[in-house]
Each structure stands twice: as structure tokens, then as C-alpha cells.
View 1: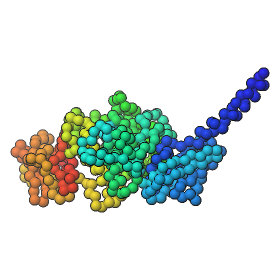
View 2 (view 1 turned 180 degrees about the vertical axis):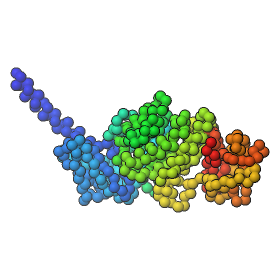
View 3 (view 1 turned 30 degrees about the horizontal axis):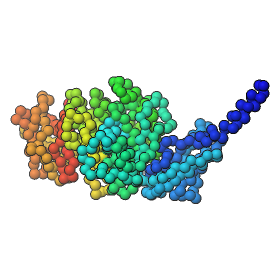
View 4 (view 1 turned 90 degrees about the vertical axis):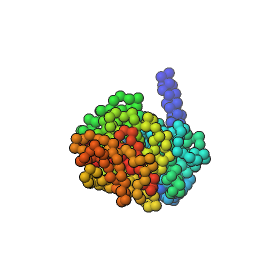
Length: 465
């Protein structure tokens, strides 16, 4: 009886084997139908299969070129394919010893990772006050996005759930407004397919987005990783990176856009060091010097003390890294009591302007805000010299937002006179000998000075008090 039972189980398992084998060749979710791959690049394709197999990759744009990969002892394999210039749709066949996977409707174009917290996650359906007519007919098969599911993990994950979707009115309503307008502007200027990977999570601090290797190299940063108060979103160091960025590290990108910082406002003085370390960590993991363009947080009256102003200042320190750019949006806020401004089109397009100029070399686009270049004290006035496109224009009744202080460090509202050469003469009757000037250096300060390009003079201060 035991012999008969053993034989029965043997044949049952043998019969089931072919069905089980149909799942032996596995690809990560991001290598799926409707994907967009970076054009004219060496692009990695990867997956898992039995280590005794050989994997062959055949792309429909180069059918005669078969790429071969051999899995390691952990069943993981990686291959590199060469993509053509923009175009499609194409197919990619991944052929194993007993299975074949086909990725269909593939486009070749520009791929960007869009990440951060709630102002990046802010969905089109929540209302975009400056959208104009851009959302009346949004369907565009040349714009696709992949939105990883919210996830966290104590350890790096090899995959994250999600699927590529083609832009249409129904799908668009749940996608990031900033990301959509960024991608749309890139597409219209370059006339190329655009893939957007929307890996974001509202309410998250920067520490969970930072690779563990960063903390292992820097004990100060490791201590900062533990200084986040409990929240409804994960707060432990690296746990979101492990689940929502690390699984995407092999995917070839044109660059990254980032909108985050609000959840780090309680200790703003630490943000610059954390932010620059995170950017370096992402670049090392992806083995790319990724262009990284980010948004300076918007004015909001709910921050304590000067925390909002200080955090914006810390964000600007990341500009010391190569291939970075910052979009200023302090002028796009209609209500400083609202943490999530609804003007998202201009945010996305300002980020796109940076990418088009710096990443793609479109010299006809001028994405840079005016900025103070030096200052000098002339009697009771402080003269601020401004670099700008054309002479600054004031959109308010009078120039406001300036403060001036003497050696006592007491700031007073200042009077401002614009000189013929565009410099700003700042003074106050209460300050005989000025030492420092600040402009919109408050939590809710909104600039009113603009250059000919329509970009604002960002908040700044001349002191380091």
C-alpha cells in the first residue's frame, strides 16, 4: 500500500511540474507592457530563472542582434541592450529554456523618476488652478507612467508592484500633477515619448528615502536618521528607499525630479546634509550621475519660527552638487494657509525648463531665477546687486518683503529703491548702520519681484545669524 501511495505521489508531482515551470522565468514589474526605455542608451534588462538556463533577449528594432545572459547561483540575471533613437512601438522577447516572456508596446524616449512627498503626489483630480486648457484633451499615447505601490521594507527589495499605463483622461486623474506637466512640457519641446516613474508618498521625511549605505558611511547622518517623530507614514531610515527606489535602480533614467522637505521642517538645519547625501546615494546605486532637479518648498504659515525659511535655504545648498537645479515656486501660492498649493502646472514646467536647458541643451529656454550676486554698505543704505534677465519688475503696489538690521540683529521692515542699473537700495529710518538684509525670509514670504522671463527673485538673506 505504501509503495502504491509513493508511486501515486511521484506521478502527481511529475504531472504538476510543467505547470509550475511556467513561472520559472520572472521579470520585475517595471519591465512590462507599455514601458518606455531611455533612447540611444545602454539599457539593462534583468530578471530571474533557474541557474541552469540560458536567457536570450531579442528586440524588434534589432532582430538580428541576440543578447545572451546567464543567471547566477541566486537565479538572477542581467543583460544590456542598446536602444535606438526615439520611436516605437516595439517588442522585446526574453527567451528562457522552457519559457518566453514578451514585453509589448514598448516606446523609446526619455525616462524620468518623479519622487518626494505630498506636493509631488498631489493628483490631477484634486484640482490644478493653473492648468488652463491642458486637461481638456489630455490623452497622449506617447506619455506613459509607472506608479509603484506604497511600500516599505527593512531590507532592499528586488521588485515593487506596479504597471505601465498609457496617458488618457481616466488614468491621468490619479497621477501626479507636477509629474504630468513636467512630462508634457518635455514631450512638446523634444517631440519624443516620455516615461514617468511616480515613486512618491505623502507625509514622508527624507530619511526613509535615503540608502542604508549613506548612513553606514556617516555616523552623524546615522544619528539624524533616528530623529524623526512617529507619523502615519514610515519614518525609519531607508525603509521606503528599500521598497520603492532600490528595485528601480537598474532602470535607465534621463534624470530625477524631486518635491519634498515639508516633513523635515522641525529640524531644518540638518536638511542640506541629508539631502545632498541622498542624491549621492541614489547616483551611486544607479551607477549614473543622474541629473537631479527639485522644488524649493512653498510658503506656508504653519511652520514654527523661521523653520520654513531655513529649510528653503538648506535646500539651496544642494546646488553645490553637479547636475542639480532648483525650481523656485514661492510666487505660485495664493493662500499661505494651504500646505498644498493647487498651482501645479507652472511647478512642473519650471522643473522641465531646467531639464530642457541643462540635460538637453536647449539654449532658447532660460529657466534660471534672478539672484543677488553681492552687496555693499553705502551710508545708511545697503545696495544689493542683482543678476537677472532684464531689469526686475515689481508686480505689487510697492516693493515689499525686505527687512534690514544693524549690529543688534533686530530686523525692521525696509524701504527699497530700485536704481537705474537694477540694483536695490535697502534702508530703514530705524537702522543707521545696516549690517544685514533679508528678502521674503519668512515662512510665508511671497516674492513680488520678477525678471523679463517671468521668474521671481527667490527669498534670500545676507547674514548667517
